[in-house]
Length: 369
Image (cartoon, rainbow, N blue to C red; front, side):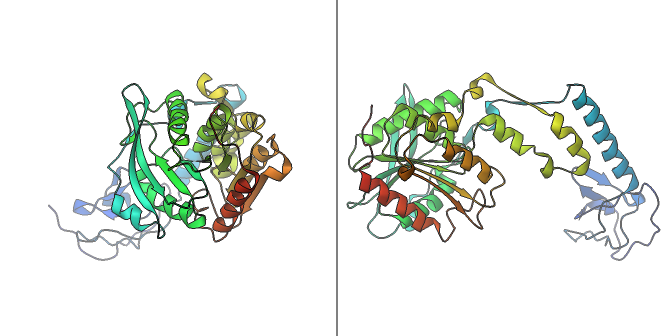
């Protein structure tokens, strides 16, 4: 192996040269960036230090004539394709749903996240022939209600359970049930939209008839992708209350938001007005606004003001579609929070407790229809 001498590599910039950003030194002084090795003959930046022991190397920004021309060419081709109707973005269930097996949740770590007076227990709920959803339940004897939390598509009890329990049990004295979706964590089954929805309804039925888990009824709380699952449960069962956090309107609009022109480089933006979003037939019927139009119970629509995954405009649209009386519908936009930091917002606890108190006051609608 050749040795590299620590120091500065002098050279003059030339048209077409590539400059590495945040590169790390590889054997013999080669530079690694994004899967591509650049040897010293490709003239690294004057600030690049060539050291065999150094894990990183600083350099000048990677902006060159050749790269800019390449981007411009891509932008022109993309625009031409889009204007001729050839630029489409197809969305199917795998856009959100994939198998994400994981370890068994650490009960000790989650129990440590609970306020005094809580007991943590593992759950294994039979939801279909040969399929069980696994998770945990945090309970206390004086709970005012039960909460069935349905997380986003990447939610797993082992990795996200402790933070979720800390936020919900810290906001109000409620029992909380967390479950892994089919194919995620330690739950069985395959992660399809039908299986996720049907098993969530089956799990709701199992929880709702157990007073030790759902005293007075069960509130369903869905976050992100879980908002579709939660609204499906409220559409099939008479839930005591409904919380939609970081909710999307529909998969089509959510996918279009994810490729919105403002999120991409200038050379890709001309194609955005011509972009066609095509969704799989199984997703076409998913719409939180339609389901909220049939729901008449207490509902809290919660979103961070800085949410760029499901922006506040979507939550406003979902809340406006609710058929619940105005007194039972609440939309809260939390300043300073994004899609993943609503639980850590200083106002979250007060907002959540106020909603739960209102549900208890009106009596909710416990039971299964």
